[in-house]
Image (tube, rainbow, N blue to C red; front, top):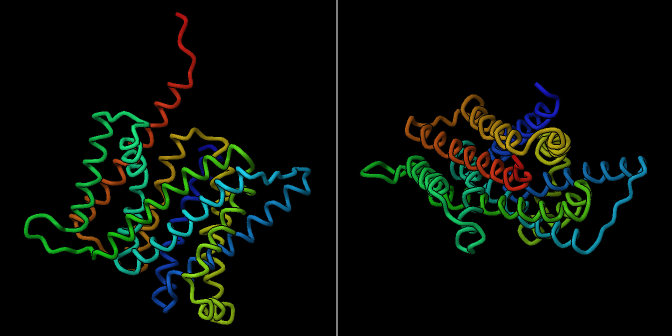
Length: 302
């Protein structure tokens, strides 16, 4: 297996574990907002170190207005994604929260249809339908089945996905105007600014002196530091479609962590719903990347 694929998989694996670690921290009494801000702060430290390393290697960053603007928007997406994700975990489970977050590509497609920037196809319509079926099976809102998923967990999970979509869109735009570490540094600073009114800073200040501080450090490194380094370095050497499939390591890891470590068992119906959503989103990612490659390829002269 190419080293680039391994790096992408390692980054996604760390993101999956970070969801499980966040669940442990919340069980210890820490709020989702405090967990989020510490993840971002540690990630910011890692990105700053990355920038310093690049400067020593002779790279000079240009923090132009477009880079700052798009990166700041991505930062707001990061803040919303993490806060809603952790709220969804606390109200439901790791597996359900991360699966709902992975509906982000479907949300992007729906927005593209509504704004008429893309034309609907039968394939995309089937993906959206499959996603709705998967969510229905996860929630149990069919027939006389009892509702297993709380409104807060469902709403927070979907908002996490919407924020994730915003982050992806803004970060891709920022990438055209500067380097990855520069864009992520600005994004993390913007995320911290967005979290200022939401965080109990007295609670946040108690983290360094608590027994959970080493877990916070590991959580931050996995969730926003080393994971980004591995993922984006690996992304240089693989096709986007390959990265999209490899990134499915994240929800698989989070689900297994929830089942094996946290005893968050899923019913057979919920398990099928999770698989339907993940397969639909994976297929959508692959098809979009293949379509982009076909559009970028020169027409055959034969």
